[in-house]
Length: 325
Image (cartoon, rainbow, N blue to C red; front, side):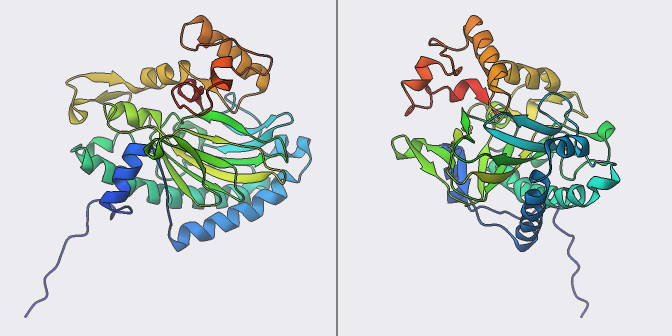
């Protein structure tokens, strides 16, 4: 008797069960366990990071020049943190090993977030094919700057006793965060509102654009980084919507219209300040938001509004709705 031949699955297998997907949808974040390939590339990447961040400032800038504001290359926030952002492979021969390892991690991280996105999509009755234009070019690190999408891989080095990030949400679809030490804290609205330190547990966060596409049925994950005496390093993979297909049909998401995704991205980012910019830039961005009526409270010398400082236990009042990472 001839054996039956089955077609391969058209979509990746699920990563989270229904209970986990419900928790992620309601709180905006969830700790996860992941596969051996991702674990291997994570350890390889962290090992190379130590060497890179130990280089002189001029060497770090030379290997990966800053470009597109905070969106590409090496960036230093004085007395706080430094980080390296990849959005495409770098042609520099001197950076081949780090870039190659970053590309391996990118692919592994995307293979984790991809089925999580599909799982959330199924729970919302959104056709899986609706994500194809939004993920175009995002699942593997693009080979050149011309092919780059907004999706990025960012490698942080938070300085001892000072490295931090204010409360914020991310701007894209989903984010994967992994740290070498405690310090990443997530807001837990389902626990009567409290901050939970995730330690070194890999964590997935829902981001602003996914919340918007879901019509508010998914909650963007509010999070922050607190300073640690020993400092910490972290790897952040932010899956953001591709702009290769500028106009997106919203009918699969429940709205009979077309939207310009570049305009939506600009609108979301324009209503927030960047927690990874320098303190001077953050202060200017907060003042702009306040002048636009998008941020309340007086702004002190640190750039933090008094509304934020006096209400650190409430995600609607602690400034997270005004900030992105």
